Length: 257
Image 1 (cartoon, rainbow, N blue to C red):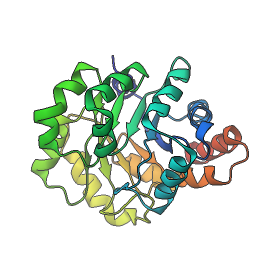
Image 2: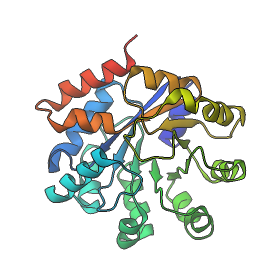
Image 3: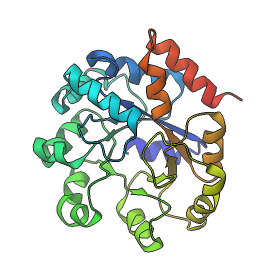
């Protein structure tokens, strides 16, 4: 069974998915960061594939992408790093990236190498649903990879239902029509969250964009199976001199009772 399916079928509530950028803050930080997240209590790790034009991401994650590329990260290097620690990782790993680098790598090669490296799911925000359904769906299924689509407050109900039909693992509900790290007034977004919850979609829903602390995490979890934190954690890593300790502190502050 795919690790994402195991996670969501376990009955655990308030699933915490934390994003990190591969090769950041240093080229060889990837394994240290991921193992620290697992040890600290993250339920899912969303590993970003650095790209020079990350259109869905705000300045914090964009900068981490630029730094990682300067450090020399590549998709080949990411898979090498994942293969070194895959037997130590027990929680699901999702790769989050953009279509252009994946197509340059070769989509089937990418799917095969991702599966071999222990990856459970893929997020490609700029992959159109039609292209996926008619050109690539069979490849992802061949290698047991779950593709996760994004929805937003502007997404029509028909399109939300289509995303639910095509997604596996979960649906990524963007909290607002903005980029990652943007300040979001979650009180004003609650009607949208309620709408998604009341649609009773087939897939679990995780809410992302603007989740930065305990209060925003808990509010998002009221309307979903959990939430995704990215920019706030990248900020915590930016000046970290002890990644495991700083990661433990960060996660503790999110999950503390």
